[in-house]
Length: 472
Image (cartoon, rainbow, N blue to C red):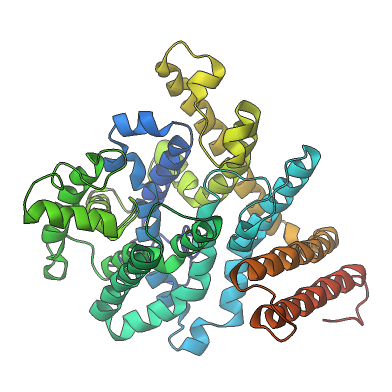
């Protein structure tokens, strides 16, 4: 539903987490509100232990952060591509489109990666392994996993939108089918408990694939053509919502070490059905939860104003626009905090028991602790976002300076060698090196040639940046 009186968004050039402004594109303040709420929940998720969040019923509110982001990504995808004028696959996969996404997502993440690398090196806690291939930072921080999902969307979203324009209902159905297929692969070939480190990596690679999260993205796409619950096209929400709530209630009552909740424990075919679903669909960012999040999304879109008025609403708007930078900043900030409080938990990618580690007399201390983290992350992310906008407004953006370009090329050259080492090691674990002509050996040779060539090209480019006659 378009409002001709909606204000344009003059500051934005985002695609998924933040809105991309094209001529005549409507602006929705509701989306900034949802992103601001989501990023506040993300920081809360990483500030509290699982025991405390579970006791607070976090599945029904705090764990909505990622579903909200995903639905907003789908909604924004539709408007981004629609108002860009792109319609064919060639236009949707244009170099200009990729440059815009790189500027918005990859460059800020590169700054984070470099900062994590330097800090980890200074403290002797750099970690490179097979998860490096998935984009895990060498100095891990909570929320890092979502970056792989976001980068995957850059490649997948254009074809999803192209299909949606031709067959909307079929495309949304295929989005749901994508997760079902991936869940089936894990259920059949990689069931819990995980038997090896290799299986753990494969499951992580599957679960960090944007295809795994496409149901929520597809819902956002669908609502871009109308987000009122009174519209006939949204009738399915009246079925999806209660089904989602029923499965969520069953999920939160699952006993430790089992897949049976309050409904799964029934000694009949109904109990068997719920137990099977909970065994088949693993996790709380899945299609059986998105109906609840989608309903709240529609309520927000219907009742939150489309325009920001007043100082508080403009602050919320700013937070929503800076949500990606706040996410990146909290990854780095909390990584340092985790390592300082509990080195073992940080190395194992776990949330420390802050009350135990810091000797708090009461769990109520989590309240000021969360508020402190929220304030620091909001300030850091907003300053980072504002600095990028300021540098662009003043002329040449910061990433176009000769020093930053040279630093980027040199760091890329170094990371090419790291990726070479981890790629060869991973190939050896999966395929093995049996003989000179074995698939593993041949694949490793090709990988070595690729990454050494890339490293040399990036290094050459770094040291010839000032030479106008040299191009690569």
